[in-house]
Length: 168
Image 1 (cartoon, one colour):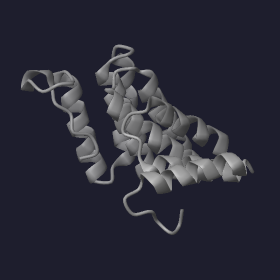
Image 2: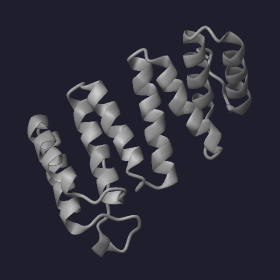
Image 3: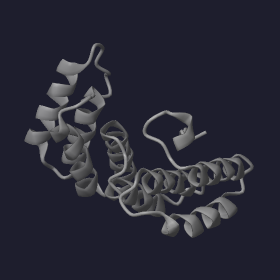
Image 4: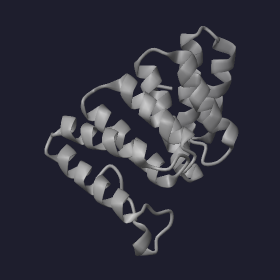
């Protein structure tokens, strides 16, 4: 499963309501059967019924993004991930992970400034900073010919890493 939700009756936090849980499980099954168009249709009908700025909406949008990725629809996946962040229902760690994914997707689309914007928000958050975050920032900066700034990020990555990678 891409998403491992708990529903409100399970006692785990954060949690989705039973209806959202059932939709997520159904969509996961559709995705597992390579029925991505049906999964997208189900999510696109369901998401507008959810309360804005809720965990249910954010987690459903996150699943929508993963479903788009299954179809290699990167721009649509990025849009859904960004909407999941905007829904403000995700805990900080999940939000940071989505920002990392969005930054990577923007790199793959050669949209370096947008990638840098997301990874810088991760770095500015100051929580769970990974060497790879600095490498990603450095790469996006190099692609924009901002070499001095890039060098600082790569040096920080090397300092933070237990075993720096030669590719950095």
